[in-house]
Every structure is written in C-alpha cells, then in structure tokens.
Amino acid sequence: MAKVRIYSAYMSRRNVLRAVAAVGLAVATTDCAFAAKPKRSQADVNYQDHPHGAERCDNCAPFVAPDSCKTVQGTVSAQGWCKIYVEK
View 1 (tube, one colour):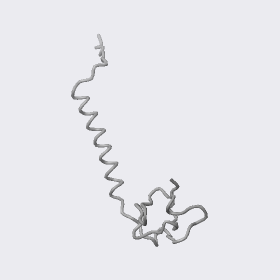
View 2 (view 1 turned 60 degrees about the horizontal axis):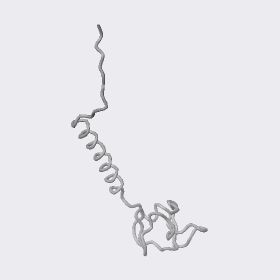
View 3 (view 1 turned 90 degrees about the horizontal axis):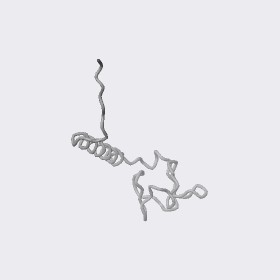
View 4 (view 1 turned 90 degrees about the vertical axis):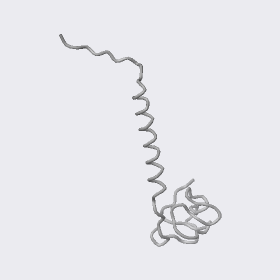
C-alpha cells in the first residue's frame, strides 16, 4: 500500500526562519547591487548644461538639488540634461 502524506497548514519554526532569511538576503542583495553602481562620466551620458525641450535635470528622478546627480559624476546644472534622463 502506498504511503499517503498529509501536509498541514502548520509551519515549522525551521521553515519560518528559512523564509525570513531568504527575504532578508533578497533585500540585502538588491540594496547592495543598487548602491554599488558606479557613477557615469558626463561625457559618457552626453551631458549638456541646457535643457532638451521640457526634459531637464531638476525634473529627473536621480537629480539631487542643488547641483548633483545619483548617476552622473561631477556638478550638474538644474537646467542641464543627459541621455539617461528619467522623468520623476
């Protein structure tokens, strides 16, 4: 006769700890991967100190007022623009 296994909804402490560890590892890995990205040079992203139509640094997601960017090296103008522009 074949064994029939019945799994209950009860979770063991081991399974809960494994799940918590997996989530923690996923969060830690995601944060580290984002933080470890090096900034790109202004030449690499075709940075210019004037806007490209309505697109400009001060309404770009990675822009940090008053004059820096999370993804581009050096000082950037609030009225500048580059090819990796991401609207807020």
